[in-house]
Image (cartoon, rainbow, N blue to C red; front, side, top):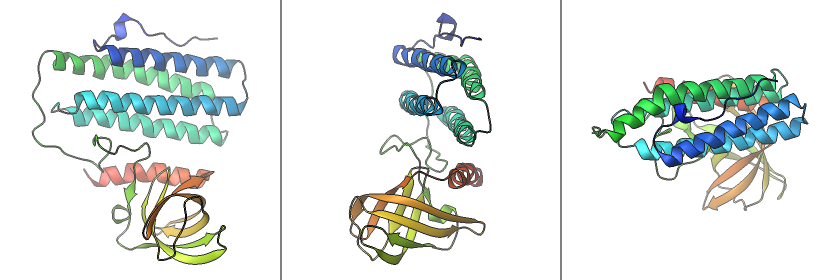
Length: 258
């Protein structure tokens, strides 16, 4: 069994909180490799992948807060965005049983080794030696550069997908009512919706709509917050087809903004 490399002084960026987080990340990758070699249950592996995704996201969030005033912070944040996008593709393949879990641990190990050596260490060295602050913030889909109200699943506004309203047919399984609603934004976490029909927190809906010209979305969601005619809903057991579509959509939206 090939072991995952442990953190050592060669990977020291010189910032205690970041170095400690890197150590934990390599330990988590090692746990994933060990569980895979032991042929652990797929539910266990999926839980480990979820833990890794959550921790890596929070690590990137902490790192980006430290570097946000640096004039080159955008390029560094884009490296983080690219990694999250690729990792989610691995997770989708894992759920579809299309790839070995070893591929995931190998990708994570190699990505962090390269990123720390080629990006983190030089970047934090320039900060330690003084740097020019960013004069004008440039946002790409507002991700991943904002520091307020940061969300795990970045929302994509309807106007960045299509010029037309995204009209959805909704069936409320709690009130047993059918009605139309307008999708305001989408993310891997859920939907932002506007409707004249009132909903309550906890209501379960079945949502059907066309997103753009080529994708038909049909998902179960649960209402998690309500404000007048606006409400947010989280996906319940997001389908692989919708997950794949949204992952690809994140990339398309960012490319359009260059």
